[in-house]
Image (cartoon, rainbow, N blue to C red; front, side):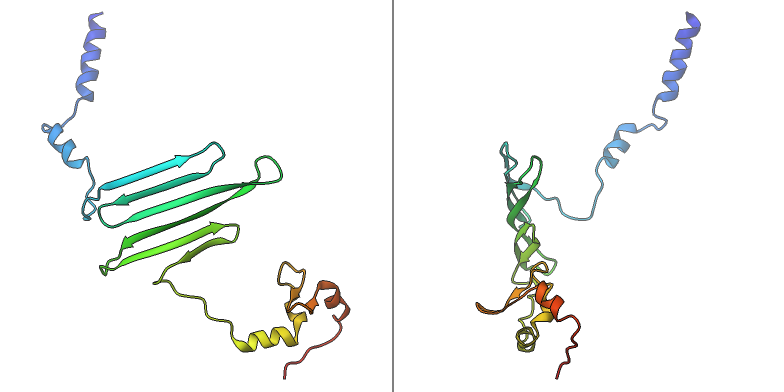
Length: 171
């Protein structure tokens, strides 16, 4: 019994911290400094219903804020479907300007909009003319079902198959 107590004391002594100022050293290493100022959360909201629809938002004292709403669209079978999200976020950039981005994310992907984001170029007139003159070149658009150029003209896969042997030259 005395040997057991002695072994227990030796184990406790070996497990004790090996430096004298343990508490001070622990407190100094408790937080990692990133060189950035501390940011406080001013408000935060998070709600979700039984179906999976949700609303989430927060605001911080550094000018950053975010809000998002997600809506579930059930599919034809259990555990299928999709979710569409709509929201916005705002932040202060390194240049001191405030940037705002609003977005939609759904089956068509993530679609951000913001004054500082690049815009897609407008359709060039030559491309639209090419579409009218040679609709067979665009048969794969709209999932391969063909395209409707106007209310009277439609080109589909069957028409393409009939003309497959022909060659098309551009002037």
